Length: 139
Image (cartoon, rainbow, N blue to C red; front, side, top):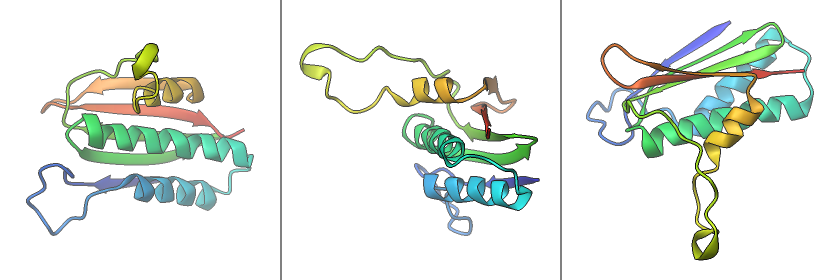
């Protein structure tokens, strides 16, 4: 089962006919896709998939110029989440800063995605931007 959500950027949206996708909307879509497929999964595994979804969508909004596409697909015992944005920049895992900056927010989401997902792919899009796809096991 696949759900596709076309979205406008939350940064520079001029088309008020289509609402922007928010991380909470994406999490609801993942929860719904898993529920419709009736895939048995531990609450912890579903929470991992929801956290990955939240991180990918939040990063697209904060660092990628807005979400331009979102797909969720439950395949066997895994959920595949794809988030597209306007930026060509590939995410980079940053080391947590030491000293006075160590309490600053940010820089932790991408390592979380990479740790929780079984597979992560970053692909450039033909018209610019990128799509990040993460596969999270549900067992």
